[in-house]
Length: 125
Image (cartoon, rainbow, N blue to C red; front, side, top):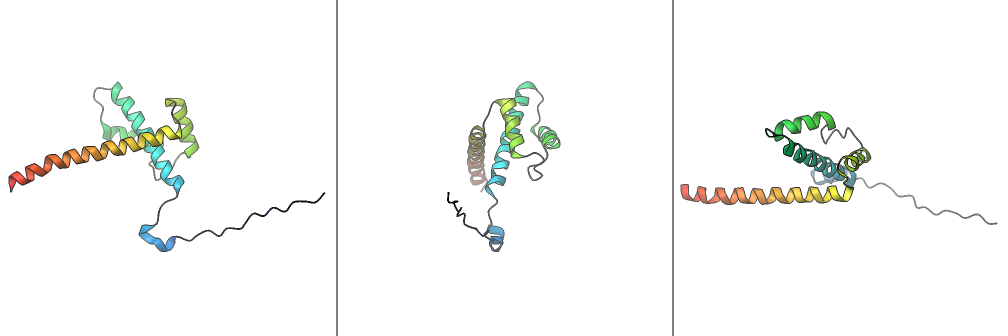
């Protein structure tokens, strides 16, 4: 019986270092930050419901001490997803949607703040 040759092409990695400040981070790095911030948001909202004197700044510090900063990547993406699945029953897709909703809320809030500031500035002039 004849043996099959596998024809897997050898790809050369593309060197994107010439892009400098315009370079884009890897997909897995961007995905990690979305998952990290979604988990922080979920935990924070849960803590906010539980405690009357909740402070986001203090919570962010405590979260960073447990999970590390997003740049550190103390835990792997798989570990974060397993944690989220056990604690909140959320999947990767759920976390990405939560992250998008969070960004949308921030944009709307910034627009409201800017809309309130503009009339005040015009009235002062």
